[in-house]
Length: 149
Image 1 (cartoon, rainbow, N blue to C red):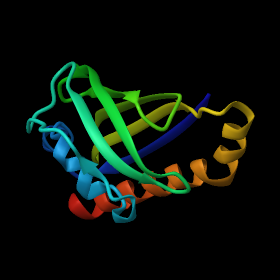
Image 2: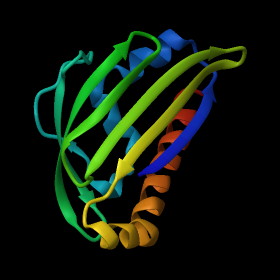
Image 3: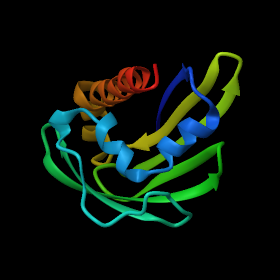
Image 4: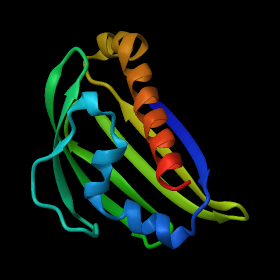
């Protein structure tokens, strides 16, 4: 199992940041354009428990992939989880948390994930996956900093 952690403090209220993250359509502008991210099904402007979201994403070395996640464990203005139901990972559990700080709102992402393919998956993780995920989350961090500056 691998764990990716990232946090940042944005100079906005927790309510303003929550209003942004609770809309599934806002995932598109914070995803690197080269991944050709696309939400396939109709989604509401406000997520809810059990919401199923179907995406199409271009994964380096593997091309277009279907990805289906379920939104779970929503605590309004605090946290939620997106958990893969179908996709490129053997396991994907992404915990999102917002906490109020003196200088704004701290946004924490903690992703627990595992690749398929056994030993080959471990090699792929070292060669490409961990760097791709780092690049995606760094892009998100930079984009959110600009959006909420």
